Image 1 (cartoon, helix red, strand yellow):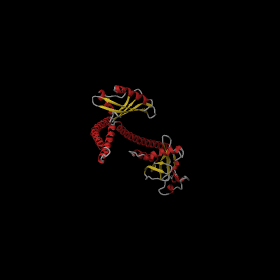
Image 2 (cartoon, one colour; image 1 turned 30 degrees about the horizontal axis):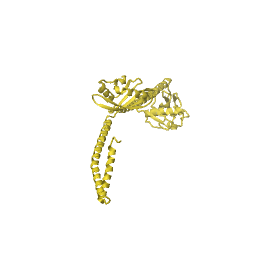
Image 3 (tube, helix red, strand yellow; image 1 turned 180 degrees about the vertical axis):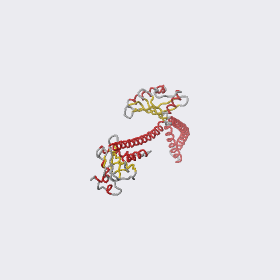
Image 4 (cartoon, helix red, strand yellow; image 1 turned 90 degrees about the vertical axis):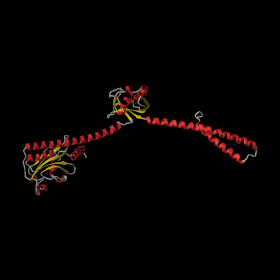
Length: 365
């Protein structure tokens, strides 16, 4: 299928999907077309590759008629008005059912509907059951009405498209706001000169807690970075600006609270992939850091308890082993079986205690 025909069908699809909020304007134009010609029937037909679609009719009911069965195809390949004063006298239509059957059609005038980019999408048709003759002025007025109808259709199509885009933009705005105004993540966009382009409320609160001021777009971000973090921040920003993503962990200390942040630095690009600056996203990991510190401390306490308990347990075991060895020496070669079993069990217990001591002896490690 030729590219131009594909584009025509795309334009046609827009026209077929249009729903006017106020159809009276279009219907009035259709009625006016009939009245200008002194005719009884007028309609707007939209032409696709298979059939005619009657969108608006005046005086007769609408419907769909196969392309090959209707003389309206006269305007399908024309960009000029087509007028047939008397269909009965024209050999092309004299035997057509629309002409021979009652009620019969005697008069036809059609003006093509052309979009702004010259795509033929339909026609404004005027019919009557009597033959009529149109003046040049009447034909010209029909052409003007056809242009007005196309403009109304294109205007409505533009309005529908704008509404769709507006709805998409509204949904995107809601999603972006939900993401941008996270309670746990700082979102910060900087230009190539350290100036703030955009920021969220979490960043504004952090600046207020630390500096008792409200950040503004255009401010130099370095004014809001604590001195002990400044060098790391500038280095990471510079790396990101050169295309290298970077991550740092930093601590913010103020009179309100001590917080820990994991800061991601990435190159920021516009829709045309031009560099606009650096995107900084900082995740509050204070809770994780505190939990890790608490867990480390708990493990330390457990190790200390195990260490002391194992040493305290080994002392009496060592004493038992000493007594067993002493008694074994007294019996010589005839050591009682019970004493041998006590010796083996005590030594086994001693080995287990030694293992515990080795696991908990930090100096040994």
